[in-house]
Length: 160
Ligand code: ADP
Ligand code: MG
Image (cartoon, rainbow, N blue to C red; front, side, top):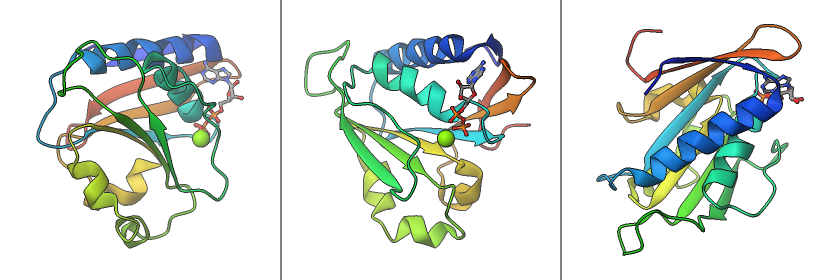
């Protein structure tokens, strides 16, 4: 997987999300959920990325910036493998308003990340870093200018 992307406009960021979603669907299921953490600047493109990512998973509903809702669950409709090993749900979790990881763990977070059929995308993942598994993939969004965003990909405990 490439480690660094530069997009010039929301459409490109959505396309990147769509591409990574399709790659994700090709992965074999693991023992736990597949988790993506989105970090970085406000307006950096986290929600925009997720809109493309959800599209790549065949999610039909519109992905919004949750204001007060922390968790949203969507059905994954496209899959590259058709048997029982396929992904079933996309969770969108927004930690913007969270102050302590406990606020998330109290909402059944553990059960969600234990289910191998879940794909879990967490905005402001740095706020709950303590309770994220080591193999969480982190995408860091950096606002370069009005239309440019730099997106860096690494593992949770990898170098920044
Ligand atoms: P975040 O969820 O990180 O706060 P959003 O995705 O909600 O960010 O907002 C990003 C805003 O920046 C949107 O209004 C989008 O149209 C705009 N934008 C401009 N250029 C880009 C780009 N290259 N990638 C993503 N969003 C962009
Ligand atoms: Mg957002």
